[in-house]
Length: 135
Image 1: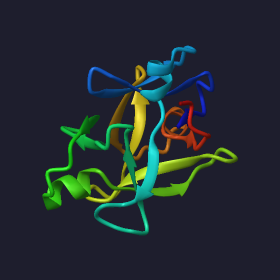
Image 2: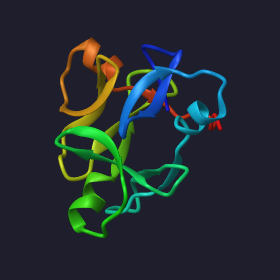
Image 3: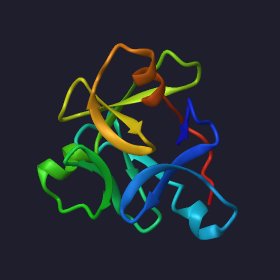
């Protein structure tokens, strides 16, 4: 997932959290920036993101983190995001399935779930492009 307003930065796992980082050429760094898009755990019309070791990305306390699926309904909802149209060509915004009106966005390069705002900065911070895996 590539940032629209920082196109040299991609989603990247760092100490269990998802950040926007510039990705180097090392295989581990590239692997930590590659996710498999699957049908949403809580809604098959939406999406979940799986890491190379089979864990999922979910929001926890409104911050995007990597965790193992515990099978709970809460986990499934926290790990499901619905793609919505973005005002940027070729980009999407990702809305939480269990917090309608809340979208993933970066704030100082940390991925968080925040209530939608109509400002241009919010729209840019919450717009991402699906790109080929880096691994």
